[in-house]
Image 1 (cartoon, rainbow, N blue to C red):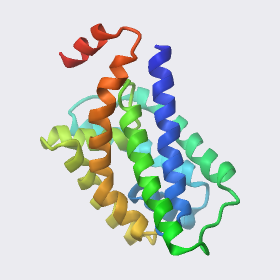
Image 2 (cartoon, rainbow, N blue to C red):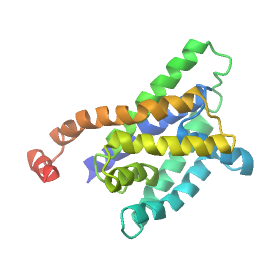
Image 3 (cartoon, helix red, strand yellow):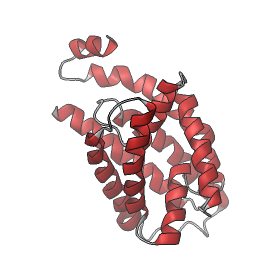
Length: 213
């Protein structure tokens, strides 16, 4: 349990570190974050607050897609992600401003952010704890419509990018890059992290064989 919890928390911290990099590249935010930034600009409160608020709604959307009862346990990762996102944005990166930085540095920051987000998501879905609704959503779409993880992630990205654009969120290269590349990055990292996760799992081969069943 401790091993799974540590992996879960590490993945979540990595993911939102990547989100913070993407935002601070000032070339547009990721498709989800761009939407929440747009809402925050219009209605106030922090990006993390709206990230959590909308995910509570997505819990019911996921339940409908998967024909299941709403997963109330998902409230835990919602609260954790909201706090971690605001931690990176409001504290660690509070005084970071790359708006006047060389364009190449902004692009490198953006691409690094996308890669780190994909790695973080791939890691924290491994322990199979209740997933944050935004991540459960692309898994639910993939399962419901028989898509790969990559196709499900890309579908959600297109929808959220369109909504962010409608409400005036910071849509730009930083939105397009995750929309095109985040799905493949998650797929790439997940397929390689999966055997490593079970290699170091306390239950070792037994846990790996159980996961394959």
